[in-house]
Image (tube, rainbow, N blue to C red; front, side, top):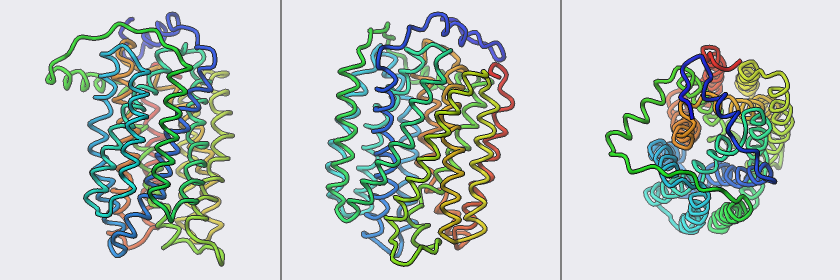
Length: 416
């Protein structure tokens, strides 16, 4: 495989010529695998962890939850590219997907039974380790097996996992909000079953493995990926958008409890499920259209920028009003923006990978821009809420982050 230089897109062209045709049924399997992953990512921190932390210490729920998310963010940020590099070294993806899924089941079974902030932090970090093995290997399936010309459709399949998984995660989270242990087990089973189905049905050819690399050289190699101009800007744009999005989503339960004026008789878990469903429905529409249109017109940057701007606009509604209607408008507009963004940006980033033979490692580094801000966002949001004394400032900060994410795609040279 050829090394791409900034502005040339050599690696993308080489991938297009040499990448195998997609395995029959691979796109539905990618949808299944990502749906299970996002069901856990939304259902556990968005519902079960927030309620569990609030029960442990109601008076300090925001600061405690922020601490847990901050510590786990550091852990996940360091661990994700390591998981990707291990997958590259082995020349296999399926064993890591399966191992991560089974590991998640074990950890989720233990997480539901703890009752201190310290133990919740430890077990959630272990859960992140298992899910990082799963995610890093699963993410690398697209650059491994999908030609560039079909990556918009593949990215749509991956992107659809978020709204569908979010809906499933919210439904389960709301339904079992009074029984943490049951909820954690259900999410663990979902990921484990998806891992078994994926690895059974998506047969893979063993790729040439890589010899062990000294730790110091690994650090240099990770840093060298970010030295690539286009890859660096893709990383920055993804990190900003994800941070803004999950800063609000991470504290959604507390926002609905303490900020939003809910209709009479509606409880926060029910409101969170409705809001997530509305957001997910809008995401499904924009994910499918965004992936298809970006392939048809071969324009990735334009669609990424527009969708990031929509995500920023969505934050205006709850910033100006604490009504339930404002939150519903936020859910629709944010879903339209974020769904399209995830579909098209995933296609874009696979085209700016510095080395195609290091796909899993580099996607693992890029996943730092996805997983790190996603988990760190509640920590950042907690600080904003504590300093400002409310949630309005949080929506403003999230809007600014989304705007900066939209601007970050323009310096990318090798993709239109």
